[in-house]
Image 1 (cartoon, each protein chain N blue to C red):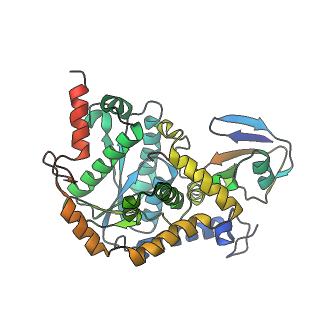
Image 2 (tube, rainbow over the protein chains, first blue to last red):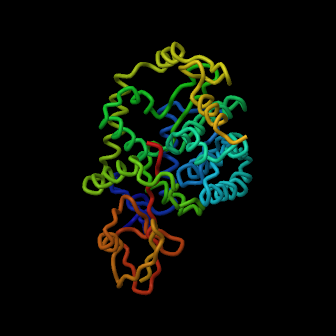
Image 3 (cartoon, rainbow over the protein chains, first blue to last red):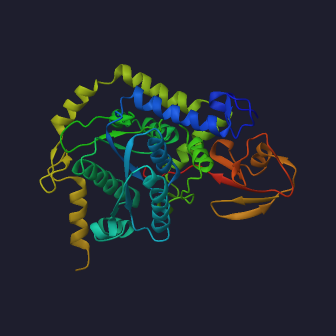
Length: 312
Length: 66
């Protein structure tokens, strides 16, 4: 297999692009895809301060690496969930990257420890409030990432969601006709009101396999082990189904998700009216001041329930 | 050749020579969901693996929450 651009030996084939690349040309391809995403979806400007949500996995560490190599001012936040036998390993990968590439590029790593701040690890919290661990984790992460971005003056928050994540989520939403969630599947979500940070997904043009390859080729050490909480999740099933289709018919995932985005661009309200809609439904939480549709936000409700159940 | 697999972590012995795409097919693994790593490098689907090679077949799919 030969590189499509320079004809040297390729290190990866990309059937969906009918292409193969050597390492330097593949890195160029990955950086170009991210640069196109940032430009076409108006994600951020060169002077903006970006907060990257990192987990220790390939996608978020690759995203931090790519943004720094493209010259952006990108710091990162890691939320330590306190999952025995997993969080310590993922935190080590994040700190290792921060101490090498991050420091060399002048970037800072922020850490939020759930055990210290919320008073218990994620499994214990989920048990206390009788909710699934993944949904408890999602509520805490969304809350802490938004709060940190707002309080520390970041212009935008970036997550490592890739093409596979978005295609799988779209499949799940369409299978269950959860139309109300489709608006939130855009790669850029505006900062619709004060206290709500802008959120972007610069990796939506890259497949999960391409990001793993980028991490391996660029010696980015990441946690290969799956989060023990994700075992048997619907997302993994949807991804497997989509990858079966992709193997038979390369380009299926991008046709599905990018096709959805094209249709959504034609049909969806402009960002201004999306912001107006948010402004009409969101207001500050009476407990913490973060935006919510209810009187008290879901994070504060969850923490109140957990605190009431915690042994004194 | 020695083939390192994940989920669960284990090592299996496979007779070489064998192309990467044939190895994945024999192990019933989707190329779109895996990388084959030999040493510090990636092996492409048409690369030939030798009997004395040691390779890692790494799954690339992750995800929870929904």
